[in-house]
Length: 309
Image (cartoon, rainbow, N blue to C red; front, side, top):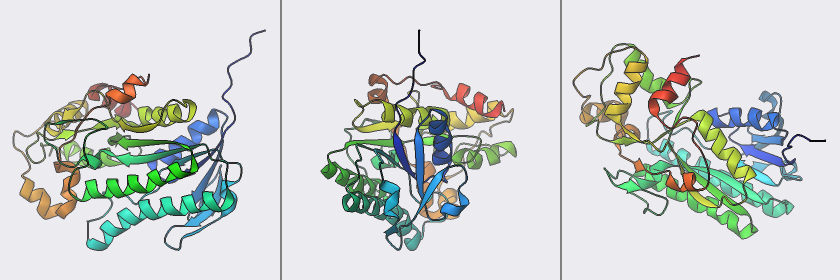
């Protein structure tokens, strides 16, 4: 008698559960038979999942959240592009990542939780503005706020090694999804017949379809050979000009033969314009070498899938 393959039961704790990735990941993992619980500032608002309260600013946490947990997926962090980068906003972006990690690790230490695997988000912003340089996981940390933020974030996450766990960090590119995130902001001017390359248009934009990103996290849960840092982005990178043209073609819109000047973007967005102006030619070869297969490797097929619904 042939029995169906079954996913081993694992107790997974997720932070950042209300975000785009976290919300989808919860459902996917539950469908695969995992026991999923989450840490949230407002646990009463989360339905269909066991939720525990924590408050990063107050550095308080319900230690019951760690009971029997063997895998933690750490996604918590204030949105990078949700508000203008004032001095206080930049500090909040860093603190929401660094202090949440410290609080999580303190709880592990206090409860002696049987955690075997910690999987954390990071971002390709780690590399800073690097023009056409091809960047892999051994490339040096860059300069600028995004690079500084990611470095502090990863340094905090690395402290988890003291627990003897398997630690995995994903430097994530621009996540493409119809349900939210950066694509909606990039789509708006194109939809309004105002599509044009931003800045020089030559800057590289690492991206990943949300379906592939969810699969990346699931692979990290299931494959104990995945250890260390991986770039989570498509193997076929594009420049901002190419991205704009493919997005416009998908939406049946034109692209204007002029660029939005860098000084205009900086005037409107301030320092936050770095999000769309810095260039990361990021390689995902290490992830591919681990056996991961992208479902949406090309931007055209990724956008067609997103806008087909």
